[in-house]
Image (cartoon, rainbow, N blue to C red; front, side, top):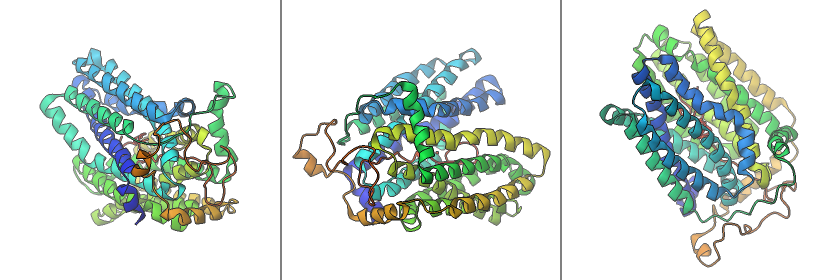
Length: 476
């Protein structure tokens, strides 16, 4: 089984372990930060601004991605995690309303660091994971993040009630230390970045231009942006649906989050195999249909129907995101994968913030059921537009090549590494003839990758209320 082979590899396991511990700390911190602000200031608007601090850096994705492409990714990941581990204890100084600016500043730095590390991890995946296994790897990464988001908020809330926000900040700092150690222990060979041949502005724009040039990437990224736009509109209705539709207490929304998170865990496990069978476009289209159909059926005020729709959202929305970023990995030259993946993250996730505001306005003006049904109508239209376009040259061949590579080693064998110099800047065995050369049928040139994400899907991944930039997850 492909997923089992990914998990069995020591390097892949170490990498996912780093993602797990870091995701645990971040998920706990994201919940506690809002509660912390609300407790100190009594202001709901300031508490809501916590999410803005984490979201805003996504808009700088192309710039941060360009920086990630100019350095070796492994040392960058180690360094960023160490810096965050040192920075977080500063939050021990937050005691009163006058100190809240310090919390916002630290959260904004964490948000920017998340975008930067997402781009760096994209390049690291290229050096470590064969094309045939990247869908499985990205799905497992999302599964790990979603699992953490089911348990970490409860742990963070308990720690906050017992010891205060400073204790949660120290917990998050400790997870960054563990993540830094995990990344430092990776024995991955990545080529040293070539000297820049153009200016900073030109390099920043190149990621967006690459997405526009590649027909399949252009269509998939557009589909991902539509999915996140519809997600924001749908998610804004959850509290009204819970109140006016189900007649449940506000705390019951937590049950809906848990059901959706469970769907996302399952979705990540099967994502790689399903995408190999269907192809990226069909896989994304199925995800769109599942997500939007699930949103629409939640207009029926019956608990079993709402739970079934919530589970469908949890499965479908992550599939769209996994399809987008795996395609970016497979069809981007290694030397610019950071820029391309960060640009894709900006295009895909930025509409969510606007849609959330739009959805909140619609809830105030109209019946929430109209909002959900509208999402259910828009989803099939977007899926049809994605599928009706002619097949991209090389798309089918690339998929067949990925399937043929399913038996390839996941990462470099540990024993082989012991017999060879483990220089991080050494060229990887079997490198393509030239970076940026057209992809062969098996994707075996230097065409690159990004992670998930998933932005660590930005905290609250596929939960309805927010999206975590660290995982490529999403909200529903």
